[in-house]
Length: 419
Ligand code: GLC
Image 1 (cartoon, protein in one colour):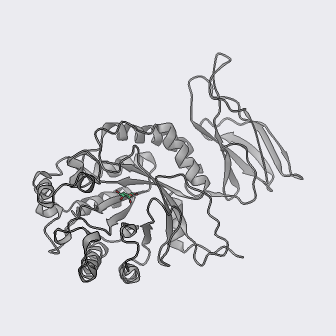
Image 2 (tube, helix red, strand yellow):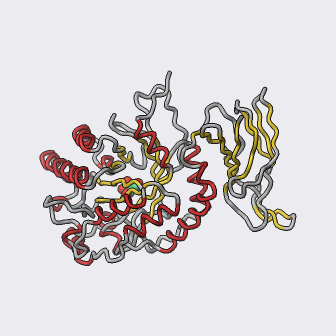
Image 3 (cartoon, helix red, strand yellow):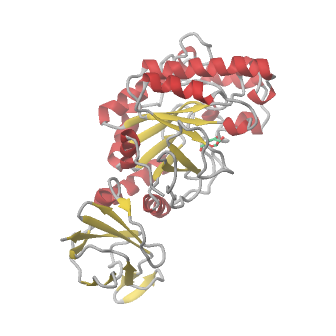
């Protein structure tokens, strides 16, 4: 059985590697997550009042795109419309539940796309498919006729996004899981997208319970919502599928003031690496506050992770895992041309010859590498190290040492250059 080749735009997507998810909408003003309306059973008319206080006065798309750039993030996926039904873009008369009709009085998606283009970041559009406000009802409560009218509305909403914002990276749909037995007319929607944006990635979140699985043939990537990636077996697939892990920094996608359960920069660095080790992109979420400012902690995490990426970025984007390898622990190797990158996890931290943190052995070994390696050096400080390689039984071993006092890189990357 063969492995299908990725379409060129899918291969490009894989090279982006690291993305930023951004959940922002009217719900951000409540600070209880993006499901606020549903979970707290807020009445439609009550909820709509949030639009009157939505000024977006702290939304600075240029600053966000710059921050992403400095973090080594290559694409941003913005919620152009989330389940509440409010659009950050100009719906061009489809309805008046959009940013231009709010006190913000701006097309926020336009600002987002322009800023992304300025900084060479690819803009992606998250778009909900389910809706809690269309004609005052939830899509789940619509009868067949209403649902088919709703699908026309969804189609026209997406068409606006395809036509009015220039070339985009792709769409990230979310919500088909809410009516699993309905015909969402996916072919119609996706073929329309392709007619305007031939190279747009089409992703549709499979939901929490179907991780890594996908249905429609237009789909270009599987999703691992809030979960660790797993290596994909593409043998015999009819189409090459990319993979993407999306991850919240806490337990909500939209701002949640009383969610204190945040990831650390170490968690983010390890997940980014693990995702790349499984050939998946890593899409890390931030939840801007009521009027669009980025919360301080999220900014700080990005700043720290960005410094790690500056040191090790060469191992992150254009690299691919190898088949038939055997590693110890969480370690793995990625390849790009003549260069290999060994990701060393769980190294110990030493201070004055005492081990003060970490538990794994410093000796690392793996098998399966065929190429003869000429040199090995750490990406973070450029130091060369010794290694032993046996090309007959394909083993490679080295002493990864410990983190010297003053450093704790969380994951260290050793660059191996082949003959
Ligand atoms: C879910 C949620 C949603 C969030 C998304 C991100 O499907 O409904 O709130 O936007 O996952 O993965």
